[in-house]
Length: 197
Image: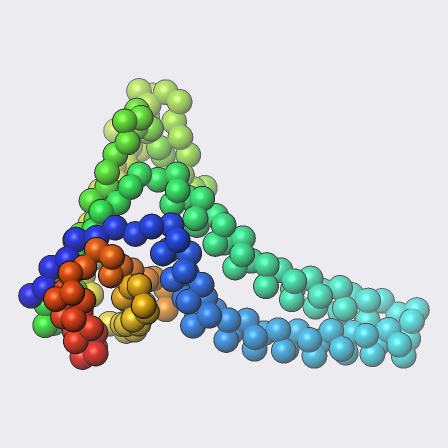
């Protein structure tokens, strides 16, 4: 078993998010863009053949709007993600690498500010001005949990860069293990560990 303690910087999260997007989102976006581009060309063709008809204009407008929004959305999501991470408390991680699994603990480091009471509902997370009025059932305490990934049963995609190891989990989540937090021995052990996945 190998154990490491680490944290992630905003720059590292941005960098890995971009890798994550290129690996998983962009191939689908390119495919959808090609389909929408064909639709856009058909719309322009309809406009040329029948300038007084509405179908070509509607097809062109919808296709153009979808293409633009599809390519702008990852930028917006990244900005929201980074803003949210910057506003949250700091986190420290401890990862343990076993033969059959990886366990990652998250420790939330609270700031000196007074903690806020929040309500989690289908409408999202909202701050409560007067927490005494909440019923006990409505109050929720968010506790960090240990994430466990079983080798061989989960889809894990490790990646090594010059500055970090990345672990992509099921095309929906990633973990960053920065080399700046690792000794040379830990770096070598992780390199060998991830080669076996």
